[in-house]
Image (tube, rainbow, N blue to C red; front, side, top):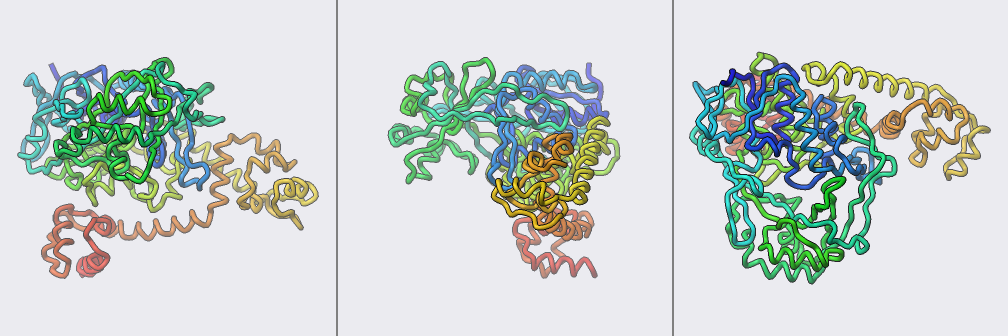
Length: 620
């Protein structure tokens, strides 16, 4: 019935979809196994992609040849560039998406991808022989052979749903949990833990009074995620903002004695940066209100996602508290919010390729590694799928450095530091965030994606054309001259200093109060010339000009880090033989087995003094 597959991907969430597409696109014969074909790429939480740091990840996935950016563009109902008031390193694209169209577009894209087969069933175990994965075992007892397996089980591993005092098994509401895999992996020497996440109630949008809320519109000129020819929005749906109040908090507190969070029934660790509403009012008791984002689930549906009101309180308390929020007085609930506990495996048990250390050719991606968020899961799936394909074809590992991508930062953090709470990406985690901007992801990564057979020729050509346009405009601005008589009057109107003599136009671009868009309007010789370039080229050049010194400094720091990354450590090195190392350093280094001095320096518990000792020892 089944052939032997190159790669089997278990789970069809955001990680599984990217893993299956990547491996298949590069030439592997892939089987994507899911418990329900109707929930492929389901947005289990909020119907949105991107956001602070997460938007950078989506752009990087797209630049490498993944599909999350394209799917997001095809299904978006609103686009916003966040943090525009800050520097460009902080600019983060975000789309509000049509939940049903997002899942549909992903499924259609996978069905159109040659080399992907599908199977609907629960996977209860993996086949292992001589320390290497050989395939999977399904709930019906089928054994399907594979050269590599990627586990992307999300919240389904022994998932347990909590609503007040009620608890029942499930990976999502209405879907059963996956059993068997955790227990088997523990027998193979893996360490497992428990985490929790939550979701808010969904409500009927017809029952809300939007006049009592603040409207949050999309950008006037909406952009998009993908560097390819996806369509920008011509029409957008608004989101809305409202707030809780002391009355809401008092009602919520009446359910605390029945809350699984506070009475000890939930053992897993929840996300620090996306806490439940009961956690917020408990931890931040001094605040008399919290923001609630009212997000439509799609173009035509009446369902509304109540972002900021994640909860596992009893459903009657949830509903009563909701109706005291301005605009929600007559709210009708579709279903209550809930918390879910699930198994994860500390990611220090993985290589930088996301292959497990205990079993060859077995890869983990997504929430199984202790992360939270669609974007974090999708990029792990992409890297796992790439490396599974390359490993079975005897090709070099594909690893992105911290100085190359947010994806590199995320995976490096997970492998070297681990996580004891759901890991979420922030711009502050990236020490080279001026280099790792959302606007230049294609310039950083598309050649890499093309070299491994993932990014298409067309994508590479578009990137090279863009790169040439940027270089040409940058060079022209250095040589074109600004004439005082032609431009001083306009400069005065913009409250910036006038010119005393001719000089390169690039010097004007360096002024914080001037933009290339301003110059396009006021400088006669530039009006027609700059109009040829699209806005993204103007923005890219302007960023490079204004932040040139900062960019150069980060490049120098990245080069210094590169020197440490080039200092290799042989595999299975016995750190106990280096007695001068601290006890903690020896334990952590033996456990993680870093491949380079640079990686060793980022392991939690390994001090700069330990690194100095290690470098002296290795030099001998």
